[in-house]
Amino acid sequence: MKYQSQKVALYYIYGALALFAAQILFGVVAGTVYVFPNFLSELLPFNVIRMIHTNALIVWLLMGYFGAAYYLLPEECETEIHSPKLAIIQFWLFMIAAAAAVVGYIFGIHEGREFLEQPLPIKVGIVVVALMFLYNTTMTLLKGRKTAVSNVLMIALWFVALLFLFAFYNPSNLAVDKMYWWYVVHLWVEGVWELIMASILAFLMIKMTGIDREVVEKWLYVMVSLTLFTGILGTGHHYYWIGTPGYWQWIGNVFSTLEVVPFFAMVIFCFYMVWKGGRDHPNKAALLWSLGCSVMAFFGAGVWGFMHTLSSINYYTHGTQVTAAHGHLAFYGAYVMLNLAIFTYALPYLRGREPFNQQLNMWGFWITTSGMAFMTFTLTFAGVVQTHLQRVLGMNYMDVQDQVALFYWMRLGAGVAVLIGVVLIVWSLVVVPRASRAATRISQPAE
Amino acid sequence: MSERLTKSAARNIFYGGTIFFLVIFLGLTLHSHNYIVNESSNSDQLTESVVAGKHIWERNSCINCHTLLGEGAYYAPELGNVWVRYGGKDDPEGARDMLKSWMQAQPSGIEGRRQMPQFNLSDQELEQLVDFLKWTSEIDTQNWPPNEAG
Image (cartoon, rainbow over all chains, first blue to last red; front, side, top):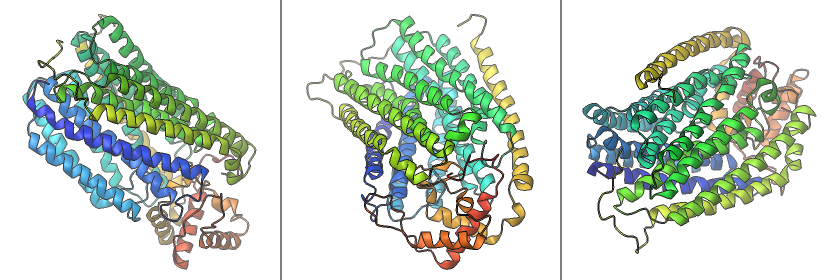
């Protein structure tokens, strides 16, 4: 760690990890309700459990991006953060807003559009938080060195905030509502979030492989070009069946198929850099998370996305457990693993230690990743059976659900494995062993 | 990567291409917006009651169990075509009564069966919610879902 103000990232990393734990806990509860439907049904209905599960995920991922930005911008811009104090105030405001939202959800205070359930005052709070963040980071960027990594990251974060403004637009016409709802949801996760992913991976590759910045940044521009050239019109795959014109089937088929390409490029990029770089970076766990992120994102977002993106297939699979399978692995591979990669990389520097608890962290990696993979397989099987029985044979929804009950048991098992893995990961990141040596000097890799 | 592609060229391709695709996308969504309002949804039947029903749908977060036009949670049946499934096309009064009494009878309390909460909606609210579901079932969705099971 070169710059004192990078320390504010610690708040965000710890806050993100706390919400991560909550997200997984509520996920396991939701998985339990699937097999014991009467569990908590009077006290905490499924819709509230799921709302907390998804919202906690989104908030902790955003919190992780904020933390990552506060960590890497000083190094990229070669200057201190404009106002560390503002960054800390921003953190607490965000954390309080998130906590207030969760408590409100439990008492039935929420809006009703999926993922955008935050009540209006909380939404306004999120915008205020975003503005504080963008002011602080943009001022930092303007006074310092401008690199491709920081440029792409900041463009992405500006668009995250701008696109969120569509959350305030709730037209009376359901079809219009759905169309703009995807402006937030799709253009985030299959658009600008991928830019955040590519730029953070580029940063990690520069730091850990020792490959020349010029090479990495050229790759970065190619990857983010591929992302937006395919991803923007790829929104079409959400416009097949919601009242939008039929031409979206053509556009969605072509462009969302191509959405696999940037994910594949990120796999090639990460492995090629590590192979070419040949530097023996001491933080093996961070390297594992970085490589794992590119691979699992390729499978979860790329392969599992492509599996049901063609309109002739999606006509039958739309809104079945196939979608759930894809959603779980895509979020895990692309964004959960990305955050854990940068956390694992940054924490030893932030705490002035040599990389610590690497074995435990890597056990967490393998257990969680295997758990998520198995969960994805079970949900995929459930979805395929559901598609055939319900969409092809026309069997009643609840009867079909009884037929796939076995898969929900296996999903719960996978979920418990994920929970165990997450406990290991959080433990390995937060609890520094007493024996761990303080870094004798600030070891900053050359570029 | 090829030496012929410089970093600044890659950057310019990124900016230029993004603007190009964004403009196409915005144009197409503008067209789609008009298409929805004028053709695929019955805007003229978007009554106050339907709009009120949409807000009841949102206030009770129905989307976090059910799907609506395939979007939402996957814990409970698709409701975009529930009006059709309940026979609303042939017997609107019958379908309306069945939907209302279904919601009033929840939760079933049956062991081992998924439970829908009791939302304590007034008769007027139930009417509005049914109006919303009926209106939704009449959106032209390119013939989705494939059958009445939803």
